[in-house]
Length: 293
Image (tube, rainbow, N blue to C red; front, side, top):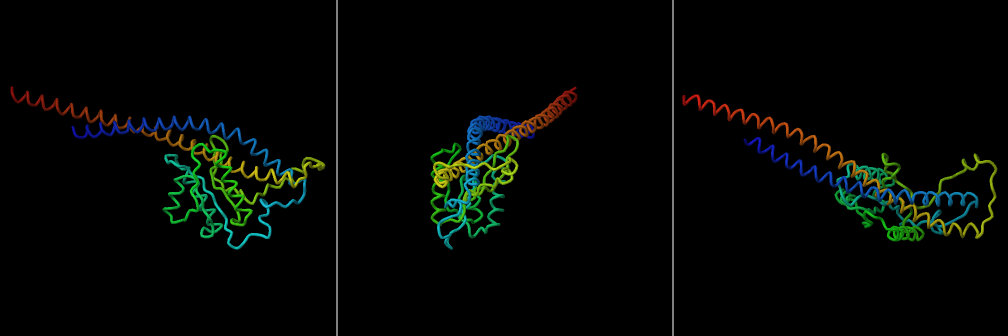
């Protein structure tokens, strides 16, 4: 009888867990649909402005800008590289945070973890670095719905510190959203801004085209480079949020499926235990009746 009661309690606990995980899966699915819409709608703009800056820089020749070459006179010896690690505020999202943290630690070891300024977005990452004894320069509070003004304020602060020579570079470690079935942790170089060379594309498109810039290319880059930095950082936050919801959705679905299988297994064990108990009781009744005859 005690075994049947224990199995009954476990079945009830598993059923409650299954309802919770199924609810969390539905919530993550709803949030994912909204976050995916924001990320996919902004990605063509972020990629387009990056390509525009690349094309402009290649056509205009060698143009110097503080966001590309750093402050005038070079960086002081006190300037350190800065690494921003974007994690989640909540758990139950499978290997999402673990993959980002491993990528961040690998990057920090390459550049020297003692000579870096580490900033973290998300309480899970902050908890890990606090546990590992790594000092955090700042905990960035962005939330599940990154706001344009908040991210732009953060990007402006990075550009100000970079051009002033306070930091020598800025890297962002985040989960890059490629497709619904594929996300990849990456360490993105935000500053100095170095657009990829498009010499191969220029050679393959035939004769070079000469452009006449109005206003001059220097003025155009002075306006477009800060916009590119802000847009790239904002897109990184959007991709991170989408990837987090996907990871939580997959993890909660797996948890729900496992709880369903466990519930069925416990139900079979309970039925066997109950059947054995009934058989024992019938045997005792029959034996008692036979003894009275």
